[in-house]
Each structure stands twice: as structure tokens, then as C-alpha cells.
Image (cartoon, rainbow, N blue to C red; front, side, top):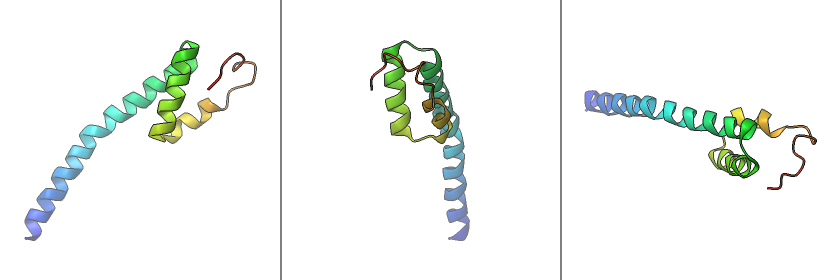
Length: 73
């Protein structure tokens, strides 16, 4: 019983390790869209990052007002 539980736990951890880089890449892409994208892309990226809730994006929400001119979310 214990060995099967350990095996299941190991399989779940391995699966999580495989999925984590995909989420990190997605967040990095959205951050790049915030920095360099067109206004519509920036809005979409901001919404997606808000939905994901990754804290790495917080610094990119703190942009100077002059950089945010003309943008509406």
C-alpha cells in the first residue's frame, strides 16, 4: 500500500515538473507583450497575466504614466 502511494506521488510530481516550464514560458511571452507589444496585445497580456496570477508580472504593471498614455483596459 505504501509503495503504491509513493509511486503515485512520484508520478504526480513528475507530471507537475513537466507542466511547470510551459506555464513559465507562457508568462514570459505575456511579459514581453506588455513591454513591446501593440496596445491591443498589451491589454490582452495584462488580462491574461491577471487571470494566471503569476507574481513575476507585478513589476510590469507599475509603468510610468507617460508610458501608459493612450492605453485603456
